[in-house]
Image 1 (cartoon, rainbow over the protein chains, first blue to last red):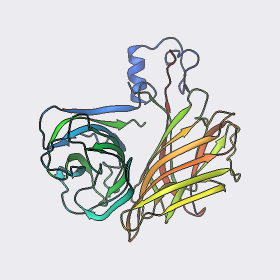
Image 2 (cartoon, chains in turn red, purple):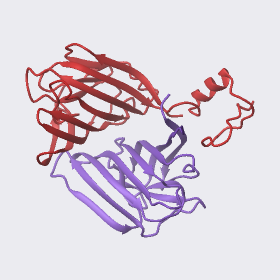
Image 3 (spheres, rainbow over the protein chains, first blue to last red):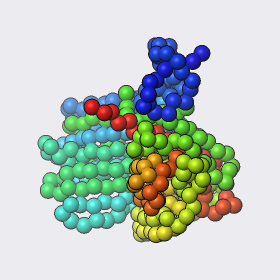
Length: 209
Length: 173
């Protein structure tokens, strides 16, 4: 049965169509990935008071090959040298051992550029530092690949900007949990033990057919 | 509803290349391409060439590219090429460990603009460890492109991958 007519100047209609869309048309086409947006919000976390860490434990890893996280956050200033890192849950158990690898390029608006790397860390970085006072939000995005694929490693890339006291910094980096396992959760926290006092985290699945 | 529109999903298993045609149109100026998972049966980079609107792969020496390579195990190298036949390093695999690539393509269907690419991707080097690429590329032709082809550096190698192409919706008014 044909789907509703899209009208002119619409992108790449890939199924036959006639007439307007019905609710059932939309539901059917959304299931095929041919209607609507291509980022599916899995979970949003808002932080408004001191929180030690965040865990996403319903990431729909069987549905999505690629996960996308956007974030902005503010740590408290009790510890200094705050930075954001992640760890992954493998079948419900968080991998906390020094088995992650990462590499990152960072740059500052007022200083030098540099690189950091490790072939054995428990704290794969998502930022080079982090803001600690009002208006010094750390903002960025992260992609994770193959989390639900038990025969593949779990890869990550990200790009982050941050304002730390007087320095404006950026970093882009990548990392891997080099273990062929099913990952079903994501943990985020400060590497120095600071609390997140303000933040917004949106985890999406990148739609596929 | 996000402004990304899934246009095409194409997979290949143990093939020498994957071609995606008729995805770049006047409907969108910017495209997002996500490749995951991506395996190569031997140590190799993944490369990209554009396919013009007639369906021909553009292999002329009209590509420039540059990559900042980030490794977990040694000093970060750089790589760059001008007037070459491909955009190199849009993926990397050495032990069929998975991999993932996100790239953006700008103005590929425009007949008055070059076709630009930015990409970030990663892989795993056997015996060494993690490697990440942050790169740029351009096809220096003012011609309309309709699609793209991905393939391993070494032509005898085979790839297994899924590539998804999205358009970034633009609303007028």
